[in-house]
Length: 128
Image (cartoon, helix red, strand yellow):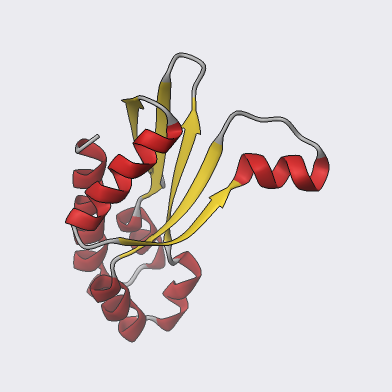
């Protein structure tokens, strides 16, 4: 099972972050966390990697419904959206597939919520 949905966009990581944040906001997600993993790795262990950022995206309505049904689903929240600046002037964007996560939990009641969340995240990725 693939837990990732992805897209590729032209531009800088700053530009693509703005665009994916706007796309996510349009479908009801906000960004709760933002980690510049490349800078953290440089600071902590001296590693030099291409710009790589991790955004924590959350749709409060869907998160609340899921937490009410299965509290332990919180270990998968917020949904991670990763951005990596590529050498060719594009940015790879990967997002956690909430539908795949829900399917592995074996809770049929959650299935519609996972599918809905996946569709919304896919719409945001398509906006790139």
